[in-house]
Length: 131
Image (cartoon, rainbow, N blue to C red; front, side, top):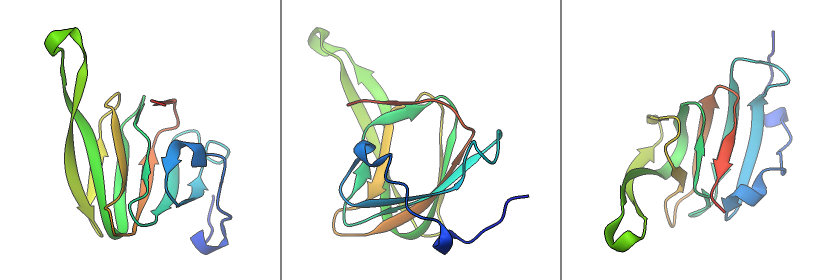
């Protein structure tokens, strides 16, 4: 059994290159403690967000504080031979949640002028980042 307190978890700085703005990541459950699930608390300051990415498994985001946004790929337009990805934005506020399907390009973070925090839960697996 694993138990603990979020306040006692040191922030993990190894993933900060995948974010824009000030972010704090606390890994609550990792592949070192569970082969079935991972859970992180991610706190975004004033408009901070992830970079564009997708996961090979579904990802659940549970808003715990503030106002956030989740932007999901809704369509790829091939007009004039150039690929243009169209994104669909969704507001996420404290108490709300969303399930981002596997292999869907997306980003998430705080709305401009607001702070935001969420818990992300998913099966361990590869994340592909668009950099």
